[in-house]
Amino acid sequence: MGTEYLAVYWRDMVKFFRSRAMLFASLIQPALWLVLYGLSMSGNFDMLAIGMPSLPGIVSVNYMSFIAAGIISMTVLFTCLYSGINIQLDKQFGLMKEMIASPMPRSSILLGITLSGITKSLIQTIIIVILGLILGVQFFNGFTIVQIIISIVGIVSLTVLFAMGLMFLSSLISINIESHEGVQALITMLTLPLFFASNALYPIASMPFVIQAISKINPLSYFITGIRYFSLGSDFFALGNQYSIGINDLLLSFGFLIGFGILMYLLALRAFNKAKVV
Image (cartoon, rainbow, N blue to C red; front, side, top):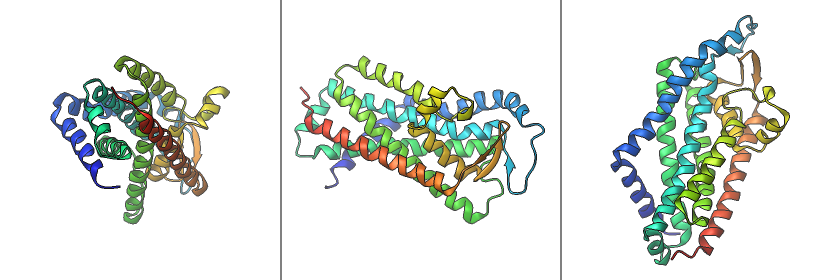
């Protein structure tokens, strides 16, 4: 594979930064969620932690710290899935036809689009982490410098894997559906169950059995578990519950996200290779 994907990537990023409305909305949305939802709900949910025992090595985190990983996942989810709409617009206005007809491998088109979604997701994740620290989110509480560096690398790695799988899924949907409205409707239908059938806002144990079963195959749940491990630690109290995330849980999160990404890549590449844009 050559470097043709860089042209696709650069074009999408230039379009993103030149669209002031899109840029502003993409950067301000996670901040609004963290400020409006996190601050407004933290007082109510933090009452659940009153009276919880304090054990050595186990910190008690507030609700805003607990849902910070969920807000990161929501932002990456929305950014990546809705990025597929750009593919449909390229199809509608004829640009995708020119790219497919060019000597560029179709895998390069897919890779360039995916890299742009990953870059946007990383930018938004950094914004949430920095804003969270300003607002009092207990990221890296009690961590050493070495642990903080390892945690940052871990968060970046998880975000890349998660965003990659979602971008492949979004590309798969957009290349197969002809209408802009159809793509938007299907993506909207996917985002809500994926987000709410996860451990983003509430403990999985408090959910109905069916929702718990769905969360076991939901990539968001594994992404959030990994983010909490790196940002809050392996043992902490939140919402009146003790959370213990071991190395096996972390490896499972990485393994699931890698498997999800590979599966979505194979399906998306197959769809791109079979695509006939007219």
